[in-house]
Image (cartoon, rainbow, N blue to C red; front, side, top):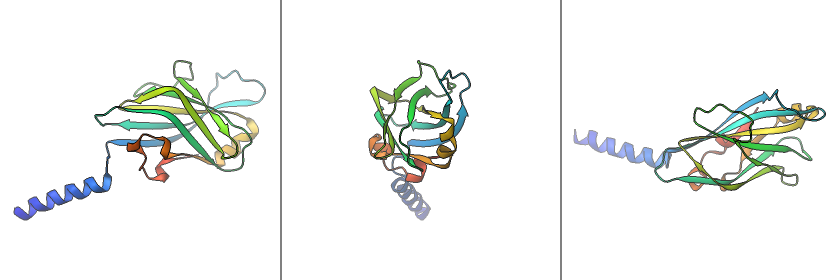
Length: 170
């Protein structure tokens, strides 16, 4: 019985050391959904390409003010992106109430920078939706690539998440 107790304590300590602060989770889900109600000029397409889901089960409030997504794929001269936010169980709608930022395309580093006007608090489940406005000719190029989150812009408790979990592939 004494050994069982010691083994249980040791097991719980090892799990805690291995998982670290497992209360906070981050998941990227590819979507690739054409928004049909878009009224764009020419041949542009408005596409919901993915959802970034922050899970915050900690006691301390967490906030985010910058989100940076790196592009991995064929070189892009320009890319137009917007970020929307919904809470748990809210359906996504591309409306002004959910819009939080337009991205700034850094063509040198091939990344989108979202600088939020104010810090956004991460609730228990917070969904950020990535929308791209692209010409039809870019759609197959985007589908062949991927985006990854630059983790050092995230709150500290999310910075040690494995890089493969921070990648949005289509």
